[in-house]
Image (tube, rainbow, N blue to C red; front, side, top):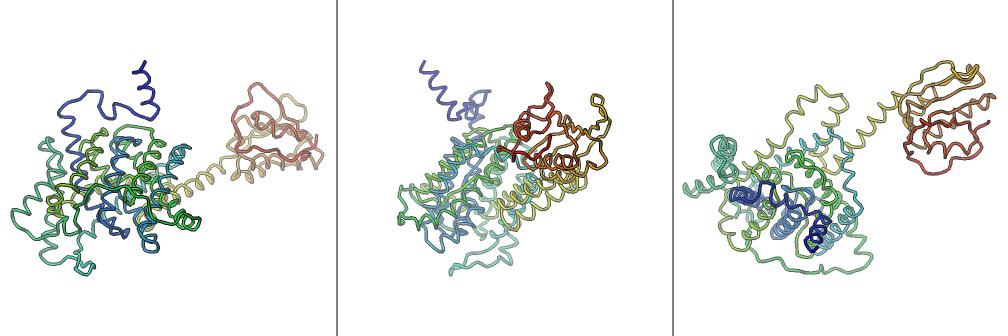
Length: 536
C-alpha cells in the first residue's frame, strides 16, 4: 500500500527512475561516465558564468550561484535528463539595463517574478506550444546559436586591464593561446578514436592545463577573469519597496526574461531529445525552470535557463541520466568552496577550444545542402532565423520564424482551394460545386471567385466533402456567396458540413442537407452568426 502510494506520488511529479538509473542497472562504469561528464560540464560552466555576470553588470558569484542553483534544481526535476542549465548570455543582455538603472536588488526581485511567471506557464501547460515551431525554424535556431556561441568565445581573446577595460591579445600571448585552442580541439577530436575511458573534453582540459603549468607559459587563466572563491549562497529577501511602482519596473523585464528563458530551454529540450531519443517533458521543464529561478532570486543568483553549449558537452561526453547534471552542479559548488585556487589555473584557451568543438558539433551542416533541396520558403526561414538569432536574440528569431512560416503556410493553403463543377444526379436542373481544399481566412477570396451566380441555374449545391471549414472568415464567405444567389432569387444547398457548421448556419434559414457521413471536426469560432442573411 505504502509502496503504491509512493509510486503514484513519484509519477505525479514526473519522477522516472530510469532517468537516474537506466534499465541496464547500476554499475561502476555508469557512475564513472556520468560523474566525469558532470565534471567536464562544471569546468566549462565557470568561465561562462563569470563572463555572463560581467555582461549583466553583477558580481561573478551571482553568476556562479545561478549556475549552481538553477543547474541543480533543473537537473533533479527538469523535463529532460542530460540538459544543463545556468546563467546565460541571452538573459544577461536583458538584465544589464535593469541593473544599471535600478541596482542588484531589483534584479533579484525580477528573477523571483520571472520564476513565478514560468511556474504559471508550466501549470497551464503552455510549453506544449513549442510544437508549433517548424523544423526550418529549429535548424535556423541551431545554426544561429552555434554562431553566437562561437562569436562569444572571441571575447576570451581579450585581456582585462587594471582599470577594468579590455584590450585584444597580441604577439606571443595571442599565438600561444591559439596553439592551445587548436591542441584542445585536436585532443577532443582524436582521443575517442583511441580510447573512451575518459571523456575527451575532460582529458583535453586536464592535459592542456598541466602542459601550460609545466612549461610555465604565460597565457590568460580562469583566475584572470575573477576569483571563483566564495561561500554558500545565503537566503535573503530582495530589499526593495513593495509597491505598485516597483512592480511596474520589474514586470516588463520579468516577462521578457521568462519568455526568453522558456523558449531557449524548450528548444534545447527538443534538441537534446533528438540526440537521446526522448520526447515530452515541456510542461515539466517550465515548472523546473520556474522553481529554479524563484529560488535563485532569493539566494543572490542572476537567474538562468538551459544552456545549449553545456548540454551538448554533457550529452556528447556520455551524460544520459540526471546524475550528470546533478554532479555538475555539485562540482561547481565544490569549486566555489574548496578548490577555487586550482580551477583558476585552467587556461582560458582550453575552454575556448572546448566551446569551438561545441560550435562545430552544434551547427547543422546538413542544412547547407538542404538550402538547395527544400522549398525556397523553407530555405528562407532557415537563413532568416539564423541571421535574426545572431543580430538580435533567440526569442525574437523564433517568433519571426514562426510568423513567417505561418504566413507562408497560409499563402500556400489559399492556393489549394478549388471546385469541380457538375450537374446534380439527384436534383433536377441543379448544379453541384464540389469544393476541395481548406476554407479559412486566407482562401476566402479564392473561394468566392469559384462561383458564377448570374450564370448558374435556380438551385446550386455546394458540397464540402473534400474541404474543411476552419474559421469564422470561412463561415462569413459561405454567407456572402449564399447572399449573392439569394439576391438573384436562387437557392443554395450546403452538403457535408460538420455539426459545428450546422449549429452556426442552420439558424439563418439556409438549406443545409443533413447526412450520416457529415464530418465531425470543430471550428475555430464559437459565436452566433447574424440571423436572417440567407434567403430560403
